[in-house]
Image (cartoon, rainbow, N blue to C red; front, side):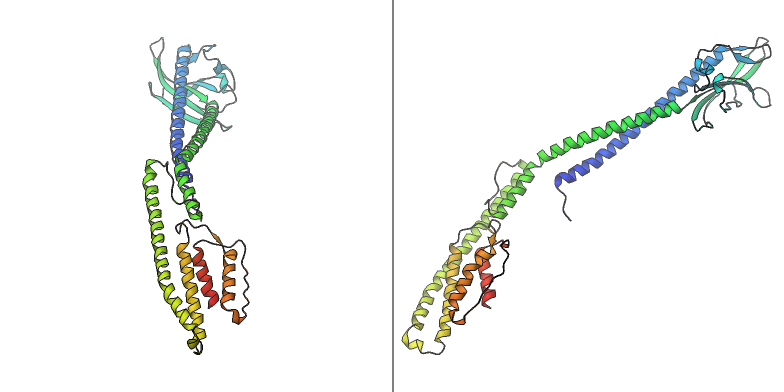
Length: 365
């Protein structure tokens, strides 16, 4: 599974935090707006109730009815969504509905209910068409001219469809605003993360260049947080260079120290006295092989190159051609047939001498 980049991880983490933050903010704003709107409706209902009370007059029959013209014209318009009702609640029998507004024509809504004077209650009803209404009922005691007190219940209800439509519109706008704001913030953060993580991407590019052999060590210009890493890595690379140099010098010294004894042995086995020995030819072959190894180690020690991190890849097919020629030369008496089937795109990431040694041992065995 491919590991996600730092910028992707940061952006995903910030996205989750923004979703949580904006979610809580949207919930809080929706809660505040809903309560504020409902409180505004309750306040309007109270105003309408007191308006009904102030517009009501006592009748000789003992009833209490509002005048012909009300301050709120919606009471007189059917389907306006504002409903009013006055009921008599004194006595022990059921309440008697004295008056209903013209707006309640065709609406099945009973707002009557016994209430003590001074008590108020908010209730919510659902009409036959599925719409909701919020109602306020207020118990009120009226003193008539004959000094007789009677209890009444003044009720006003308002359809909540406009409120629900306004609430839905507000929620849509809220989600649109915060959704757009979140996208803008994520875009800005993506640009910011890209700029902040530029040094990290520079480290990645230079590591690839060092692995490919295009660079010997890390460059400069890194921020303070990465200077320690690049400095230590450069020290490690230089230490690897020095270690490889010592290794090459050791190989060179060893090869040079063996070259002279091998030359002496070769001269001895080429004398007429030793040529008659039965195993002289085999000894000569092994000396030849040892001489090839010494020459190879001398060549390897003299090779210039970077560290193991900095060697450029070697094309395998091109590198093995000299090996085939060398084997044919060494084993001329065996009539060797050596054929390679190597993809031209095959490369060896390492030292060319190591490749030659591995391939030579395989072919020789």
